[in-house]
Length: 529
Image 1 (cartoon, helix red, strand yellow):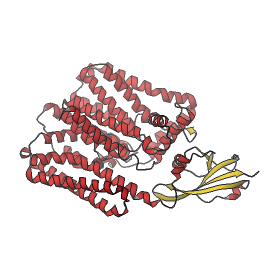
Image 2: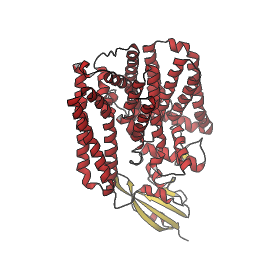
Image 3: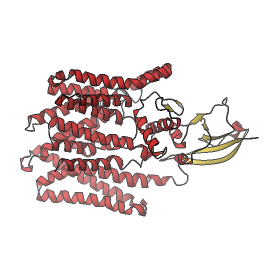
């Protein structure tokens, strides 16, 4: 297969993986914060000093919000969440090609680069996070890009890759501070020196230092500006964030050691790198595998030492794990079935069983819920069922007729089944079934399209409410003076004694969240003449 065809196939698979489910889920807390800040950037035409519901937003660096605001500005759209997730999908697509480039330059193998990027584009956690426009994806993708160009610079000794690396390093810092330095860059440096020794790094130490200084200098522009804007608040936010990493979401040391599960259909292949000593008959690939597995282990250990843990914080583990998986899959593809050892054949039989089980479960789940699917999705339902049946049939045919093709098909369908299951079950079950629960009331998010003309007040509201109503919500207190006309958002029926000087001109109720039937009321009040 030619290089252009490989890149085209990876592009198509990545597009399906990262773009096909953007429109399904409603915004969670982290996305809401990003979307609100982006909306206020555009509406206030203030790009440098970011705010959240009208107040300074210093907790997170602004680059992901700037990218989201840019989409809002270009499309003049402040409410369609699928559109506002395009930046994170593009970033994940960029990650796949960074992986391709890093593997190609490090191993000098086009096939290995293709296989590794194929694994990345069909890894469950990457496809999941790739549809959520929070901050977590950006720093690690930009850092992986910085590492990629740093390796290119180490190989060809040119200055240009180091300058690109420095720029991407700055982008990482401007996305979520130094988290990717700790969680990805330091493990990379240790692994690279351990495997490839220090010769390349010694020869390029000035260029590496230039890239790092450039990255830090560019990234410091925003925090220095915020210190000038409001030093006391900025420093208090830093202290709060520092304490958060040791007091909130505290998990045990082994929390990320189940990362294999979140590799999805690659779970078995992500375990076997640790089960035996591998020899691929090629010194360059052996060293690259050793580098990849060392980077994988160190990333896992570094993140495990941090007290604050969440599933999405383990993202660099899933990114780096694609490297040793890719090397092993490339070895299997180049090895004839009759020369595979018993251990390797058992791995393929296990993977065969998992693919068949996953396909049958996909069919059963879709069939079980099909009575709730409206007619417009019936053909979509049949297409997904057809794909699963074809995969099962093709695997059995190759198992009995041609074991070399069977081996290749196992690897191919391991990626495709994950994508099919993710897309089909997300589209049909989550959208068509969960969405049917909310029939009695409109969702609060519909107010975004209404564009309320008057200010909104509330005593108790969440950040998700601020995103849903489409504008800033003012915190109401008894001593606060109210305007002549305003909207009032309330979790319970209005206590009119609090607003005795106002007439209630309009009242409506909504479902507060997409998948939870919680009612919230909105009142339009006008001062009595």
